[in-house]
Image (cartoon, rainbow, N blue to C red):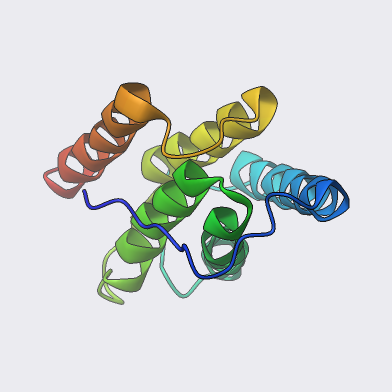
Length: 137
């Protein structure tokens, strides 16, 4: 997977903005966790719960690299791509959504900046593998 890096706009040096970003992102991820906890194993891409997860993820994806949280951006890009390319008659896998949300939680918990190095690349590969596995079931 190609790493998404936004070098044009970085707010990473502004501690107050970074704190606001982390607080907002933490709330968004908790909202996603609540949505997932109430979801069935499969849900249609047009269902409100899936759309809410997409919208929250899209915002995280868009802001992550601006604060040098590129792994958040890359994980968000992976999930957005998965949901955006899904045909209307296909069901979104809760396992795929869960893997991405859990990754968001870990990145926030450990405040992992940048791409996460080799571990970040391994995480992205694992998420891609989960998407492929779920597509074949």
